[in-house]
Length: 237
Image (cartoon, rainbow, N blue to C red; front, side, top):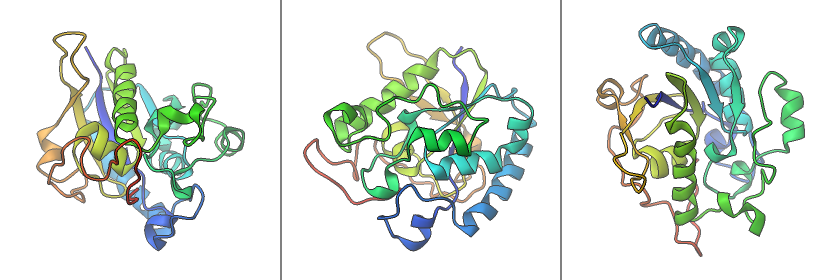
């Protein structure tokens, strides 16, 4: 049986506050740090009714790593493994959505496991970084590859800390406010040709997220902000 997934958007980062997308891999804003408290409290309450968390996956960007270390600290203290995965990074190729060297991140977050991060990270623009390119086909394929890795995982519950546009446009169709989360189950695949897809729990879908902060309207996967292979789009991370 496939695991249940809790998908979390990082708390407010400096580029969300200032709209300055030239900031390289920005950290959380002061408000974002405070938002982690409400996220933490809500997840503690939510998880009291759910299976034990078996794994935390995190995009290897500073705002997601900081959200994880702050909002999920009690799970980390209990020994839940935190594994960074480049497939869950944001879709855009501007400085604010381009990560830092893994060697730097390992020093800042020594309790997190970076061994599985693609060695090409944070490259998104060269031929080596094609998997992470900012175009519709690459982003949708990356989402499928990310879900494929989780479909047969043995854990009953996995928390993933990621980014708004990737989760909305490529993974779920649901919208995520800063520091809000939604809960999903995998849809059963009837054949090897079926795509990997998720169904959101009614409790978070109808409430606009676990904290009720997120818009309820759905979007079509692959729509809107995702450019064709040769194009680019407005940033919204």
